Length: 477
Ligand SMILES: Nc1ncnc2c1ncn2[C@@H]1O[C@H](COP(=O)(O)OP(=O)(O)OP(=O)(O)O)[C@@H](O)[C@H]1O
Ligand SMILES: [Mg+2]
Image 1 (tube, rainbow, N blue to C red):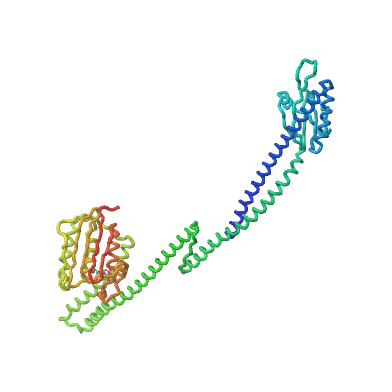
Image 2: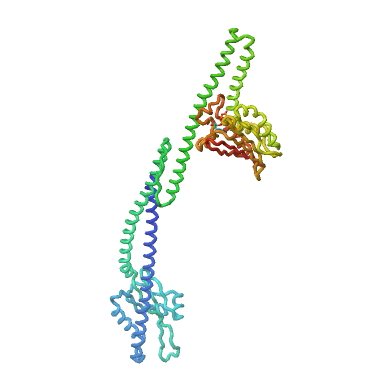
C-alpha cells in the first residue's frame, strides 16, 4: 500500500477513536448528570408531599384517620404532578402497597432498604426503566405512647425515558460536532499525508537518479524536521559520492597515464637491450665496445627492475604484506650517511646538502624503511633543486621524532601540493619528465609512514622551495 494511504488511514483511525471516546464520555456524563437531577427532583417532590400532608394533619387537629388523610394527600399530589410523569406509591412496613398509581409496578422494598429507611435515610434505586426514590413515612399514633414510628415509605418514580428526551438534543449536537470535526480532520490529514508523501517522493526520485549516476541534491525546506535532516544527510552523501567518483575517475585516468608512460619507459630500455643483443649476435659489437654495451644493458635492466619493484612495493604495503622491524637508533647518524652518499650528485647540480642538527636523536622506527623514506625525499629534493641547498634535520618533540627535508628548489603551488601523494601523480611539467620516475615515490613514502602510525606534512612555495616533515610517534597505539 502506498505510504500516502497508510498515513491517511492511520490518522483517520486515531481521529475516529478519539471522536468515539469523546462522544461516549460526554453522553455518559450527561446521562449521569440527568439521572442525578431526576433523583434530586423526585426527592424534592417526595419531601413536599410529606410536608403538605403533615400540614393538613395539623390543620385537622390530628383528628382524621392518618391513612385516609395520607391517601387524600397522595391523590392531591397525583393530580398536582400529573404533567411530571410521576408514579406515586405508599408501601407499608409490612410490605403491603395500600396506594399506587401504577398497579403493574412492584413497589415492594428489600430488607436492606427497610433497614436504611429505619435509620431515617432516603434511598434511591431502579425498578426496570424507572428511577425511584423512597423516603420514610413516620407518624405518632395519638395515645399509643410509642412516639413517631416508621409506618412505611413514600415511593416516587419516574421513567428513564423521560431522560432520553432530554438527552436527544445533546446527542444531536454531539453528532453534528463529530461530523464537522471528522470532515475537518479528513481534510487536514489529507493535506498532511500528501505533504509527507510528496517529501518522500522527492527523496525517492533523487535516490533513483543518484543510483543511475546523476548526482542531484534535494532542496531542503525551512521546517527543519526529520525530512530535512534526511535531505541534509542525503545531500552530504551525494557530495561525498561525487568526490569519490571523481577520485576514482582521476585515479583511473592516472593509471592509464602511468600504463602509457610505463609502456613507453619500458620500451626504450627494452629496445636498447634488444639492439645490443642483436649487435652481439651479428658480431657487430667488438671486444672493445663490449664492456660499454654490457654496462648499458645492465643500466637499462636496473631501470626496468626499479619500475616493476616500485609498483610491487606499493601494492604490498597497501595489502598489508609489509611488516616493520621496529628498533631504536640514532636518526642523525643515518641522515649524515645519506647526505654523504648524495654529496656527489648534489655537487653536479651545484647544490649543497647538509644535516641541520648535531648530536644523537633517538628514533623508534624500522631502520631500512626509515632510510627508504628519507632517500625518497632527498632524491625528490635533488631532482627539483639546482644551485640551492638541501637540509636534513631530526629533532625530538613531546610525542614525535620529527625528520624534515628542506630544499630551496622550484617549489609547488597549492593545487600541486595537495596531489603529490596520489599514486602516479607527477606535476604536469617538463621538469618532472625525469626518465624512469613513476610518480609512486611519495605514495610509497606516505604508506610507509602510515605503517609507523606517523604522518607527513608538506609546505611549499612556488619558486622558493619545499619542506617535508615526517612525524614518527615515540609510542605506538
Ligand atoms: N621537493 C620537491 N620539490 C618540488 N616538487 C616536488 C618535490 N617533491 C615532489 N615533488 C612533486 O611531486 C611529484 C610526485 O613525487 P614522487 O616522488 O611521488 O614522484 P616522482 O619523483 O616524480 O617519481 P618517483 O619518485 O616514482 O621516481 C613529483 O613529480 C613533483 O612534481
Ligand atoms: Mg620521487
